[in-house]
Structure formats: structure tokens, C-alpha cells
Length: 431
Ligand code: GUN
Ligand code: FE
Image (tube, rainbow, N blue to C red; front, side, top):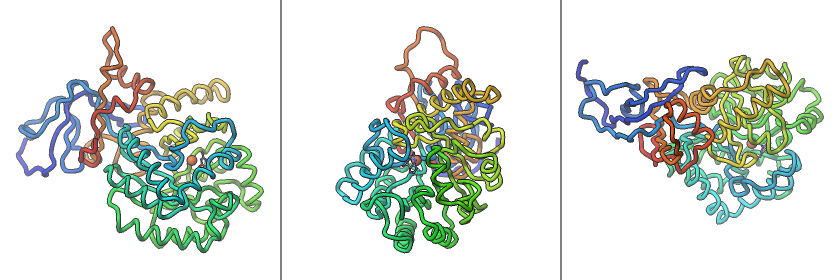
């Protein structure tokens, strides 16, 4: 092959390379090389091509190497209360446990302690990209962004908007002041950070007045920002939205009437989508809105099980979310296993035509599916961002030989952060 100039940051990782090619096709190169050129993958090879002779090559000694995971939905301030208060459904849980916790982030010293722990945990996980809710407090949100910036992970962070139906110490005084603080936060964060960008974050319809939603649309037009929120998580919540928005045919339409339900240049994430009607599903599809499946959260809060097979069949873009702390685990290994398990319950209890998710499918959702929200990320195919995770599973002992596919499958159920021994984002080593 012809010699050509290679970018400065050209290197290879050698090991068991696993990456998705389609939702159902997982490519495995059992003793392969993935090459990084600059910030991007130059592809996966069974032997190092002659053109790369002499480049740095890290031989991982048979570790599994796969694209970093994308966690498409989580709440950083809730990390502090993970594993607590799982005895209620959504609305009571928010009012009893979550709003009082989030109110603490007015105090920057508390935020510093709590967000440092969160950022460190996210860095040590197998996640390379994430879409994160903060709280409504601008100073604490900027602090979170600063801490995440230092990790080298690529994240979208949202200062939360909420001007109604919460509690006095966790609610913005009115739409106007919420919009004003949102704009000042956007301006500051756009010029301060490289790896962390702002994402518009109306908490959910019950928390945001019509005037606030109208302002957020204006802000979106001015700054061209993506948006994240919650949709149809819990039946009581859905009923409440029906009462709050009698003119909207459904919950999805309650966002759509403000132009905040997916536009071609400002993509939208909607967490949960457990109880969407046929009309809402059609609208999700029409607008290209991403569904974020948060299986463990939906189990912990007894919200239900999202019809993920239906979303996949409809070609609706989808990824997975830990939904920390309605989900108690940051680990995307756990998120993948939970997604398979609840899809089996859904098949058994709700719909025998909804085939359970496979290992290949959840791996795709955690990598390429969710990663596509950030552009060409989540695969090792040539041209994708070089986000890679090296996993040493040698501590997960076994007497019998295992194939690479079996090793990957076990990781979903047994993998922990301690097995992550290296991590790269856009070609840069972050762990
Ligand atoms: N809906 C509105 N806010 C929240 C939240 O913090 N967590 C979850 N799971 N759902 C929500
Ligand atoms: Fe959430």
C-alpha cells in the first residue's frame, strides 16, 4: 500500500476488538488491531497493514476492546442519593427525595463535593459520552461542566428549567427569569468548554409553564442547541399532562406545539417513552426524536416497560440511559443487561410478538445507537470518532474456553468499572 503522511496521533490497540456494524450485526476480530489516526478510527484489521508498520501499538494481552458507551440520560445531582428511596412512584419520589436533594446544589461547597465524586465515577466507567441533567442552579451547573471538562469525556450538560409545580426552594420564580439565567449560562458555557456543551433541558411538561417553553424555543433558534427531556414515564404523570394541556392530543404533542419535539438541526432526546400512544409514536418517528430507554429506572419506580421492540422496528433512533438515580447504577454493562431482562418480561407478560432484545442489539444501542446523537461515534468503522474502552475480564475466571462473543456476553452481566483498564476519547487517552 502507498506510503502517505499520517496524522501525529496515529497508534494501534491490539486485542479482541468488538464493534457494531448494524443493530443486529456485531463484528469481532479476536486477535485484531484498531488503528487511530488523529481523532478518528482508521478501521479494524486482522493484521497491522504495512502502511502502519512502526506506529505505536499497545498490545493489551487479549483484553476486550470496544467503542465507548454513550449514556443518553442521567442526572448528575442524583448520584449522591443512588440506591436510596426506591419505595415510591415517580411523582412522589420526585417530591419526597429528589427535589430536596437537588435544592442542595444552591450550595457550591456541597456541589463541589458531590459533583467531584460523580465526575470521577463517570471517568472510571466504560462510558465515553453522556447527556446529563444538572439542576436549575447556574453556578453549580458550570462547576459540574468544569469538572467534566477535566475528565476529557464528551458530554452535553443541561441546566434544568422548571418554573412551576415543584417546591419553593427548587423552582425558578417565573419564565422570564428562567429564560434569562438559561441564556447567561449558555453564553458562558459555550465559550468556556471544549468537551462539554450545553443542551436545553426543560425538566418535563409539568415543571415548565407555556411561557417558559416559548422562551426556550426562542433560545433554541438563537443558539441552535439540542434538547433533552422526559416523556410518558408514568401513568399518573401522563394523566397530569393531559389535565395541564387539554388542547394537546398527547404528551408528545405538548412539546411539539412549542416546536420543541425534534427539528432537523436541533435533535431531541426523550427519556422513557414507556406509555406512548400510537399517535405519539408516529410523531416520534416523524420528527426523528431519540427515545432513551432507561430500563432500570422504569423498574425501580414501577413505571412500566417501554415497548423497545416497537421503536426498533419503527426505525426510531434509540439509545440507552442509566437515568441515575432512578437507576442506581452508572455502569452501562448493567444498563444493557437490564434492558435485555425487562424486554423478556415484556415479551412474557405484555406482548408475545415483541421479541426480547439480544446481546447484539443492546450493545448496538449502548454504542452506535446512542452514539449517533453525537455524530459519527460508537463504532470502529473507518471515520468514526476514536472512542475506545479496554476491558480486562481475566478476573472473571472460567475453567472452559470461551469465545470472544461469550466473553462480551458475560461482561453485560458481570462487568464492573474495575475491569475497565483503559479509555480513549477522540483519540486521547483519558484513563
Ligand atoms: N421526570 C421529571 N424529572 C425526573 C427525574 O429527575 N427523574 C426521572 N426518572 N423522571 C423525571
Ligand atoms: Fe430522568
